[in-house]
Amino acid sequence: MSADEISWQPPHLAVAGGGDFPVRHVWCVGRNYAEHAREMGVDPDKSDPVFFSKPAASAHQQQRVQYPAATEELHHEVELVVCLAEGGRNLGAEQWAGRIFGFAVGVDLTRRDVQARFKKAGQPWELSKGFDQAAPVGVIVRASDWSPDPEAGIELQVNGILRQQATLGEMIWSVPKLLERLSQNLTLHAGDVLMTGTPAGVGPLKVDDRVLARISGLPVLEFSVRGA
Ligand code: MN
Image (cartoon, rainbow, N blue to C red; front, side):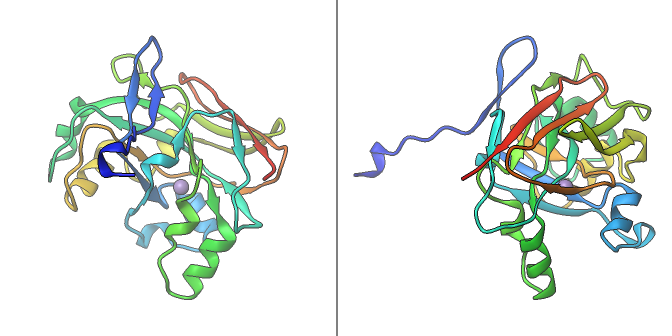
């Protein structure tokens, strides 16, 4: 095996109306809905956006997600996903609108028991968020065809039972504000994806569960959880 034999492609996510979106990096935001911040034991009035990453390779559109290793508490977090057509560094909120390629529904799958253990030990909780298939994403809708309306509903059902329900207007930091804040820390690029945080109601998934995630006006994201 030599270096010139290595072949690798980033995940390509389907786009409504044709084409696909190659994923360069998956950025995530924690605590962007006040009720969820409270359920995680944090005062939303005193918290700043918490940014973290998932591996780009964890983004996918597969209909079956294998229950991950090394956890007994896999949690769902439904989120609005923003896909960038163009990057930038240290840009203001008003400069980001024209750089968005499109939007989708996503689920930030989380090994909650692993996260709790790392938090308690004061260690980075990277592995609670980054694992195989950790970022299911729905079909992307171009920004020319859809934009986040504060009234738009965001919800997640497990086996037909409603677990999470809110409106996008409940986000503490808007999409442009999040991009402004993140780009003050590093350079964003075309192909970057931002998962914008989850509303309250996160909870466990088990093998054979069927997950349905929805944001008004975007294609529904559905997947099932399969055993190892
Ligand atoms: Mn999340």
